[in-house]
Amino acid sequence: MQAASNILNLLLLALLAGLDPSKTQISPKEGWQVYSSAQDPDGRCICTVVAPEQNLCSRDAKSRQLRQLLEKVQNMSQSIEVLNLRTQRDFQYVLKMETQMKGLKAKFRQIEDDRKTLMTKHFQELKEKMDELLPLIPVLEQYKMDAKLITQFKEEIRNLSAVLTGIQEEIGAYDYEELHQRVLSLETRLRDCMKKLTCGKLMKITGPITVKTSGTRFGAWMTDPLASEKNNRVWYMDSYTNNKIVREYKSITDFVSGAESRTYNLPFKWAGTNHVVYNGSLYFNKYQSNIIIKYSFDAGRVLAQRSLEYAGFHNVYPYTWGGFSDIDLMADEIGLWAIYATNQNAGNIVISQLNQDTLEVMKSWSTGYPKRSAGESFMICGTLYVTNSHLTGAKVYYSYSTKTSTYEYTDIPFHNQYFHISMLDYNARDRALYAWNNGHQVLFNVTLFHIIKTEDDT
Image (cartoon, rainbow, N blue to C red; front, side, top):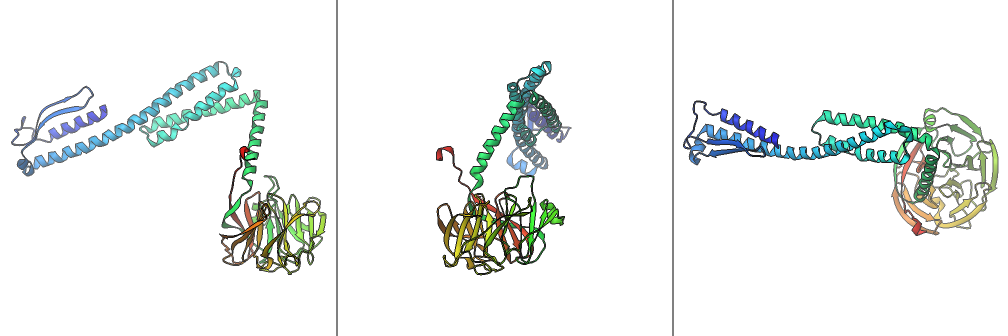
């Protein structure tokens, strides 16, 4: 406020200086007159002014100029008042920071005197104070009055953070067991939270993201949903028939660049494109049969095979695009599944949950949706989602919940960018749909609606 008063005084002196210096006093008839000028105890300027007559002011050029200048002074005074309010607010933040900085300096003096005796509780207090201090930085940057001062504060906070990090490492050496237990507890809580968020109802499909363009119009590519975070291997199976070669890549990056890490020559040709890799093994439909094969990549041999009873095969009940897609093997958060059709179910889709080791059918559900009218299908959280076409304009049209044994018609569109889809499978680890889209390997993102259950709900 003192600064604002000083500026007003200077402006008034400039105004007075703009009048004729030969006249020490101006009569009220000739123009405005300043009888006195002083400051009140708060530093504000107080002036006594006599205004000219209305008709004189309108004709006198100096009066008009003076009036315009005084209007500018009033505008500037209002601006200075606003600036002063902001300055006072910023100053309060600075005072708060200064107080906390002084408290931190005292704490660090205590730490320097006897650092080895520092207890975890004392360290936590410092961390909490730092957490309170850090949010003040963006506030100060937003309402900064002095950039150098803010830069200095930021530099001091960085130094303090570095010291705290060093102290944290030192304390960790003395309290490793306690820290380890806290990490284990946090990991358990996070896993419990993730389990609650695992399953949900499909609400939206976005994309696609084109990963690579390769191969024929038909094929399959996939990753293992049960693989560890460091294991990002990709498997590639081109064509829907007359092929036994599986190509392996160590990562998506290697897949895009074409850097193969290994190839597998399967003992049998596959049928269709609806294979799945699950827990280190490839599950596929043996050509010209309803036999399911489990092939271990690590062992390099067949671990199990079993006939899927009554399942149609060799283009008896394929998807709309054909391609020996009678039997569709897939996996989700719950386990391994087979989707197919039987004469007993009038050619409608049958859902069977399989034992991943023996390939035995553990339970089956018969739906009323014709297999030949389905473009593709995939499982998410025990619910089968079926598309109405493999061509442009395809959408998720039907769903069947194995949990409630009920179905509903849906309307979830997705962008069939390359006009022809011959493979569409959900990967629970990536929360994405892998698709073979007319010689393009693409990914779709999915949006699930989650209902989180608390302990009170169980």
